[in-house]
Image (cartoon, rainbow, N blue to C red):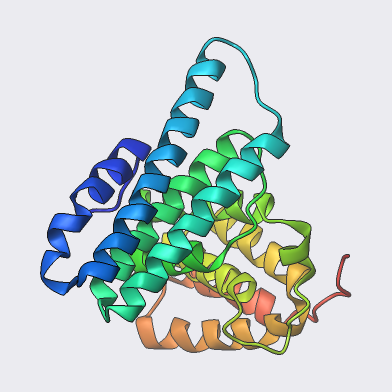
Length: 239
């Protein structure tokens, strides 16, 4: 499936979902799915009305955008959970792509992202598919915006012993995508943020990065940047 880029794409995908899942659903699952999709329809209607208001120069507060975004993410997580229970990992991955549509919408109204796990999974899937520099740069920009709009609770990173925590994976993916762009400014911004937000994880990340430099034969200018960060000592955590 191509990545979904708009709310219209996401809405169309969800409208077709019951038909695609017909062979996997018993009556209870079908009822649960239909109930969830009805709520998604409400969510899309609210989002459409907000977009209409702003096109008429009536702004919404960031807090209102956050509330709407939270509702969308909660519905998404329930749908992801349903795909898990049906043992349909390919469908789960498709549904997680919708989280990037919700994240973009949230960012456009300066809202706060409180639910990161589906977003990080979607980013990792896209990053694995991308080769072209322009696409990698666009993804890198999106990840930078997501980092900026994450909630303070996420940024505090209180579970810092857990390697698979979404906040850490977000920065790891950002660092990998930035490196693959070969754009030095993009790399430096991603690496600086890594040092600020995750100093305790930075040396491990840059050590892995140095191994990749050898394994994948990166150009000298990219290697030089990675090496300079590898040789830095992380600063104190800034929060």
